Length: 228
Image (cartoon, rainbow, N blue to C red):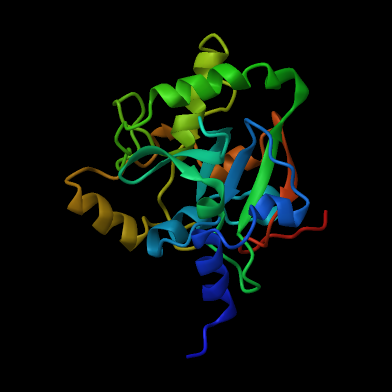
């Protein structure tokens, strides 16, 4: 039976036959690095990507922060359904690959003035391990979506001063001017109104923050232009 290269790579990474992806690509992981991902999750991720602009045009729909486990392994702390959890770095990277079989992930590193906040921000995230995923994108409801988790963690680490900034959320197709059908169905199934215009933030916007610098890309997220 012939195994496609992409599927073979995923199998090898998940079963431990490949060394850590970071070691293969020239990327040296550091605690507090923020990993932005072009996550393939169907129409909802596509809708998120269409209304946000990421670093150099990249379509980005997910984000997590890098830490070490108690066993010394690299893990990504993330809010992803159904809860806030720690995911092995290689598992995170293998989740979504480009046509060349490379992770659709950009690595961001905090600028020097803000690196002092990382230990406390990581502690804040650790405190939230197991909290439910915020499927309706509402702030301060005891649930967390991916970028909200990092927003709250760095805000707490910065004496309650936001490090990343909120903006009115939109769920509208920028070309058609109306809310994406996928979002209408999604919130209808949740028995919740579409939170159009409510404050929030997203991975694409965070990737362009002046508080961090994109230092590495593993592969090519959709629409990403690696050259300035």
